[in-house]
Image 1 (cartoon, helix red, strand yellow):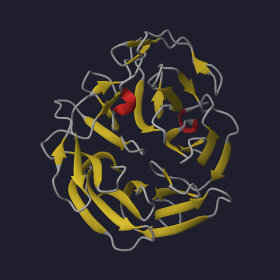
Image 2: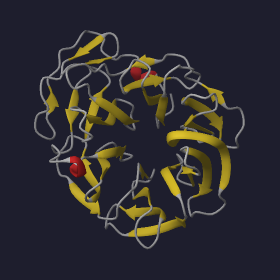
Image 3: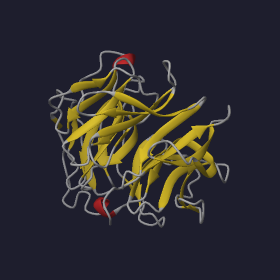
Image 4: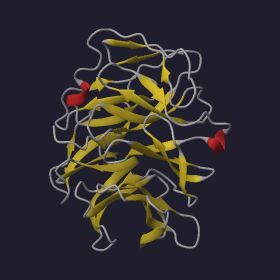
Amino acid sequence: MRRTLVSSTLVAFLSCGPCGSAISNSKVKGAAAQTADAEIVFTSTRDGNRELYSIKADGSGAQRLTRNSGVHTPSDGWAEWSPDGTEIAYMSDPQRHGVFSIYVMRTLDGDIRRVTPEPAGRRDDSEFPTWSPDGANIAYVSPSSGIHIVDSQGSGGRLLTSTHSDGPISWSPDGTKILFATERGRSPGIHVVDVANGETVLVREFSGSYFRPEWSPDGSRIAVASVVGEDSLSLIQVMDADGSNLTQVADDGYQGGVSWSPDGRRLAYASLRGGNSEIIVIGVDGSNPVNITRSPRADFDPHWARRRQ
């Protein structure tokens, strides 16, 4: 199994060592010097496999970040920049068995490490990573047990809550809470869990499916994609942090969540606006939607870098 980071860097996956260990790499000088300047990381099938790419918010500078090959072509997805932009956390299924682990890629030299334990089976995998604001920890979802937190180097893992998240999660800008959505239990809806004690509070109850709620950069609002039909189309919505003042931004969301720009003025999301899944950047008020990918294959799961470029 072999992977390459962007076109100028060769990263050989020789083995998936124990949790927290770096995967052996061979590198070419120059590594990923430009990736730190890219604003949005996303998943795409434009080259045949589910790979990670980065792109600037104006649609320029698109780069392929992973290049998977082998008997079992890995499936990569749901990537998120670290707060300082030097690393990317993502979920990957190396054997294409539907079992994911969380990996971290260093953008400077292409080093990759697994930070979650080797999954024992399909229900024991690790999905949807999100960084703490200080970059020290990563929270993720386990379908079998709930929301976990692990050191960004792969040590000191702990279960935060056994309440299940039905999709991606988001760490609050002040570092005290994690936002998630669930359709299970007595109170389906959007919840926050206290990082210190694991207590959960319902933010907004709903009937239906809400996917990937995300805090605004200042923590005052929440963006969310809500599935409204059997065709997987979703509404892109924004609400206050307490669940009030829900407003619609767009009605053509598809396959993935929504992400805030660092200044809180725009959103990025996957759309079927032109009949194919593309990444759209749009004003929070629904103004000026722009297709920044324009690819004949599917582009989805965008995540904006938290820092200002």
